[in-house]
Image (tube, rainbow over all chains, first blue to last red; front, side, top):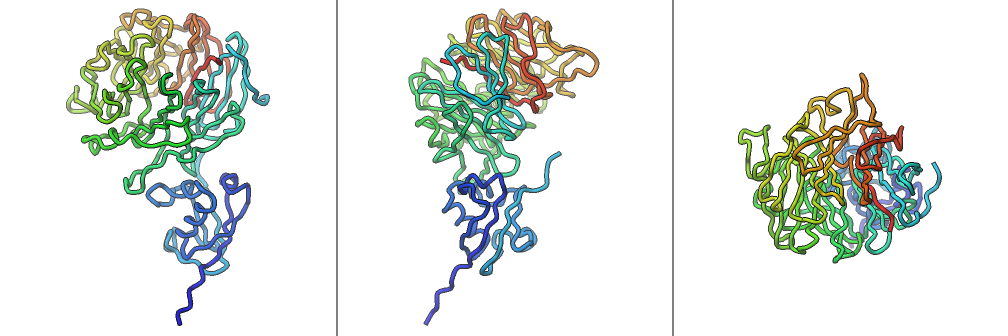
Length: 98
Length: 368
């Protein structure tokens, strides 16, 4: 008998600039097998949030950093990085400007 | 800065888009000005406008540093803002990415719910429900030369949108560095309108397209009369852009960005021209130039404008405008955070705001 795989659940901590789009919540809980699915779930629950993180092409914006349990996903498998249950995701803006 | 409230009829409201926020300047007499911040504090605002055809809906081009570009609108003079239900986003299949929103223009008075927006990468977006839903104009997006359009230093930006108030099928757009384009069939097909406009930076100096148009405005009562500031000169067309006449004449530089018209004296045009290398005033005197004969002769306007060693002010393409009063007010915002205003058609100037972030745009509206 096939046992359906449960979808990993993650806590996503949002930057101040994006909290208004999530009902002023500092963090939200969503499910997904990969970071890409997590972003899709965020956009489903809070329409428009996904476009703040990714271009129309699906590519992560250059000054958006996503950390999965303290590791920048750019140095893992990018948006295809798989999640484990109970993961914590930090979304941060780059240190940029002058 | 005080909190913002609504403004009484006849108030002149100048919407100032800056590198760090949208500000409002308001005055009843155009001599004493009040500066107020809006709910878009800290945001990178390329342009803002107020649509008074169906109320007082304010629109802003909010081009964030980190989290994308968004068109926003406000029904309380900028205190709170909403995003459209269907905003400006390219279809995923187009493989295009929205870089910046450059301009938002209300449509004709006969189409009160219609607004237009121009963005980088160059495309025209239309809303027919006062900004709640936006869609892309396919005629321009699928132009057969599209793959050969090259960006200017500011990107491949559609920055000027002009509708013909007398002809619902005709409008113009200005794209840097493509040039002027015109449709005569309501946006299904677009043609180039760049004859006699130079492109000194290309091997062919007068190409069909590839001109670096900086800003384009329209004569208020003669829709076929257009003016443009270009990377390579200042031009006038008297035939809807079929061809253009170089009107630089005695201006000290062919290079500048903004251009504005006096609605009641439409042969009166204002420009700021710059040193093309430094992109600031040509001499030590910051100067606005005015023609009162449609570009035959230009007069330097300096009374009240700063001068001296080190005075180096730049004005971007949306950084100058005129109001619709008579005599008209003229407004200039600088990349050093000042806004200068004249209430007498440029004869004299005063500083009406200082210490703002670098100014991207000014847009003067008389409250109805």
